[in-house]
Image (cartoon, rainbow, N blue to C red; front, side, top):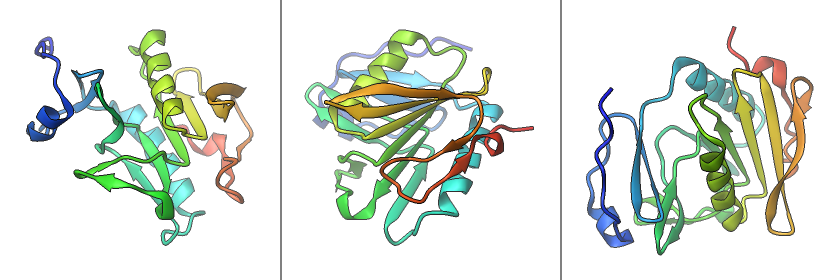
Length: 185
């Protein structure tokens, strides 16, 4: 695979004028474009399983469950926009501007790729906490574990690392997800 092109730092306005990526995914962090390859099959299957479980328990009139390629703007200066693997938004608090989401979802889910380093993962978590995401789940397909992070005093802090059991998002009362149903066979 060829190395992604080196990009210059872009402003929010310049970034809005750029064409959409046709292959793979893209995030912009502190004005730098980061190109990422498409998700692997295990990654995509974990995201699909989580979405199916959430969709069966949340009222579509009240919540939106987004997966795939969508932009969550963290800040305009320097422009930072993330593409979470999955996000649950409460419809009443969703803010869409310039075609992108500018509000904190109730839950963010990331499936950690084996190639993702600790620095990039921590950077992403800091971005989510900066906009007030109350809960973040980090799924590790290789270890078959889920790290649950909860927002406390402005910081997403580890609440648990689970290999089994039931996930109960605190900002989505009544939702329960059996971890064993998430992993692809």
